[in-house]
Image (cartoon, rainbow, N blue to C red; front, top):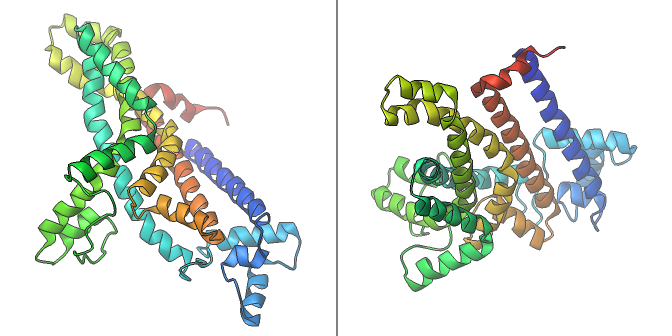
Length: 343
């Protein structure tokens, strides 16, 4: 087990260093002064320029520069934003919780609705219902996320006026950040309007979360259905039926837990497309997360924001993928043979 975890840790470190190397190379291609691209300070004083040269070893060779760049980025020195003049690390800490909150709610929606529909599609004897579910998932998978987001905003936000279409909460509510997750911060607030603020924050997250949940929802339905069909044909399921166990107990206690194991693996493979969809959704609904922050930095040619945004998103995807792989290995007995692999 320890060797397996060490190998995954080495994989994360190697992938992170490769990513930092690509960003280091791309930084030298920016059409601005290298010190400006690295620090975000457009017109540095003599002292600041000397400090930038010292921090990033700009008077040394490429290898020394790469080592200095890696050390500065890993230590949290990401420079300052060209537009806001604030440290990038502070802006990241403000943007990440909003993205995590949106992704978490979207994931809950996908699992709560996707797993039952996948089970129904696998076990139902009504071919029409099965075809309807699978056709619906195929349609949802094929719809472009930007079109879906704009359509939902047009109908439910503009024409019907049921839901807000931009932002995280109404600006009339003054909620002091505690955790960074708006739904939690509204409940933790000592404001007399915290319940109304919570309802408003909940209404704000519905449209972007539903839009973002469509892709994982369709994948969850299809993977759950395929896994349930495979599990229900296993020998231990037929043995449980022969023992006279109730059908609902066989499905919920024996079949479903084993069918969810392959789903965990596919969630890890879906993180990349999910992150790209999240960036589009945040831009459409003006959600103050890392995706809209990164796109805004690209429009404004904020080079430190571009580097830090790409680095943060990529590292989160790599770390989450490896973590899910470890959890999948722990949950799947057939995968534990890696624990006993030869050294």
